[in-house]
Image (cartoon, rainbow, N blue to C red; front, top):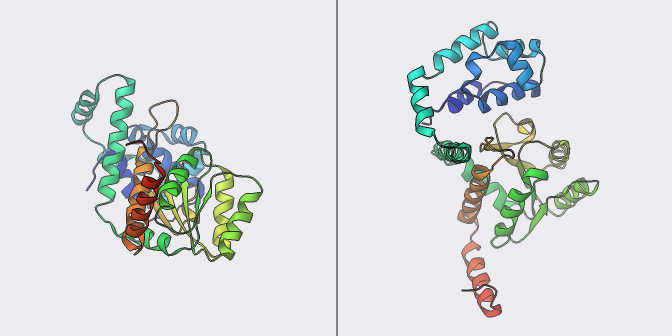
Amino acid sequence: MNDSPGARLQRLFEGHRLTPTQRRIAHCMVRSPADAPFLSSVELAELAGVSQPSVTRFAVALGFDGYPALRRALREMAPSDGAAAGAAEEAGGNEYQQAVLAEIENLRRLAAALADPAPVAEAGRLLAASRPLPVLGLRAAAAQAYGFAYFAAKVHPDIRLLHEGGTMLQDRIDAAARAGASALLCFALPRHPREVVDALRQARAAGLTVVTVADSAFAPVAGLSDLLLPAAVGTGLAFDTACAPMLLGRVLLEAMCDVLPEAQARLEEFDARAAERGLFVE
């Protein structure tokens, strides 16, 4: 089991019904697990962009008498100073190297989560059965949605990429539902566009099962997702890095292929046509 500080925090929050504001606080703490045990309620409120009473209510929602009790529990969970210092020394390097090492840790956390393959297998079954299959990703998540849709189209008969917002987005979701879609795959990464939240509400209203790849189990789209698969993003550079969400998308593709009986035949047909057209430089 992954026992990183972020993973321990996430396990603490799992199983609790949290409001959107409380999920925002939890997400903030998971992204800064080393600092979380030492923040005052005022500091945590400022960091998460919420009010100080919201932090108190968050602690009570987790079953603590108040925020001081939660902070004591977090300090008991934190590694010793010696262990923390050793980890920092091991990381070393310049800021670019540290960003890469942090992303490797995100991949380790993803690998640990995949020790239980049942959620991904269930997601693969839902996505494979949807004809058509709309794939949603806006702004920072557009590249993840595009990459998934590009490969998925080689094995799935009807992939509909939704990577642009605007007034037509909900029309396209409704059109997919009318055409027989039963599920929608969403990639949701920070900063989370309001349009994604609205689109998922529309998808649920249209009767679609929403499968979401998000940066955290406490992302703003969590409450609108029937099945949420978290994969952390890196925050060490000016712009977030999303290696783990990308890899999780490929894992979902593999799970889809496992339940699509025609997947291998479609791939072989594509390879044959590509060879005939001289599509790729060998």
